[in-house]
Length: 246
Image (cartoon, rainbow, N blue to C red):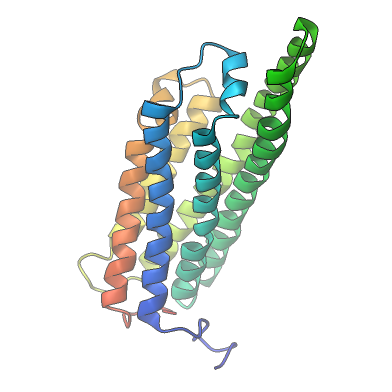
């Protein structure tokens, strides 16, 4: 094994790509479960108090844990892509990994606080509150938390946007002549456009793009991640393509 040479992953190439694709499928399953939970199992909220009490539902706690695990799993495809493309595009592949890990860090950081502090502490305190004044104080903390999360989402989405742009370029530089190799660059370009739409909607007042934060969120994520997963599984069938493959 030569860690300073191009063979940077001491695993079978096919197994590496299958594992990367499987991690994407796990992430996609978590997103699908969230969509189903919001549509059929999580009750409709009628205000901030309902929003906070929903945290105590078992189905919402399962959703939160699965989403966090799915986001952590994205680290694996990010690493595999970086190693595959490093020879053809060293700078952009490493930048993609840095920004991608930044996205994972931002996501897990806020979701950990959201689950452990908001869900496990404030929601319980609200359910057990004996006075209107106590409930009002808890809901005020919750409103402040929601404002912090909104601000937190700007570097979160920006890091994922820069990751997508970097990986789209790196994969395009490392592509071979296979007809399906456009799938991954297309997926990352679409993801960059999706994230740009979300940023403009959330922080630049472009309300006509609100669908990217609402009704279009799951269809867009499903399409993008499916394209990328297919690319990984096709790589597993052709592990010796040009580029710095694992």
